[in-house]
Image 1: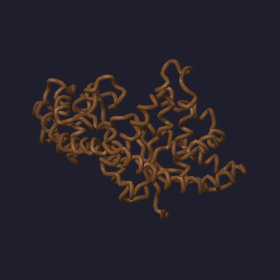
Image 2 (image 1 turned 90 degrees about the vertical axis):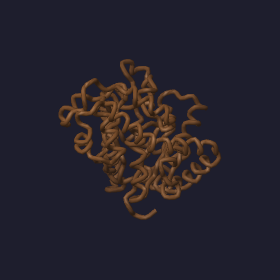
Image 3 (image 1 turned 120 degrees about the vertical axis):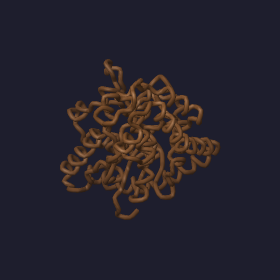
Length: 334
């Protein structure tokens, strides 16, 4: 690889990726591969911090790869592989467990959110997984990491760990301090049933999200049933911000149509939300159903997807092993 900026990002194989994943991550991944060297990883080791059905996990890994490719990721331009196939991730995670501090992990808000009220029953893996995330990034000496707001704290931890390693082992600048890549114009995609919550596969109602494999009919029904209110679309953004569900639909419309929100409000203010829903449905069907059809097509040839992962693993392993050799020497491991 050349000395261009190096991007690393990982996506958990939860199966059936949705519109939030598409607008918040996948489209950005495709854009980045045109500008930088990119390594994209299906983080199956992160997934098992909570129990996964083994058969479902394997299926979800392949579906995530299919979703990457269907949205335009080119495995000949970017390295695409699953995390557990490169053992260096787990090895470096252990080394970094010994560098990272408990006080740092205690400040991670996402563990508190995911563990809930009974954190004593949470897995140790869930608690220390930010160290594994740091290992994912630092194993390749990535310079940039695309992150959403909910992962920014973990990237800051990765920078702290990198800095402490460099200081502890007297090797200034050995690990670069990775910078966040936060898309400027991408709004968080919220639930279609509750505009204060992020769109998520874990929400019980399937009507809360648009899945990448949804049919035209399913998209149409979900947008029709999406929560709004009986008032007309307001003129000002300030007024719209008081209506989170309506704001969410307009944000999705602006993202897909690549139109500024002020222009959308100029065109739609005073109209009923049924008009917005009709226009949004047309856009979503045009944008999402071709992706879903491509995912279905790719999943029919699992050996092709497995071959992509195998080639990606081989490329990733070359970089990982070279860096690990130097890391072991720094630490004093024979």
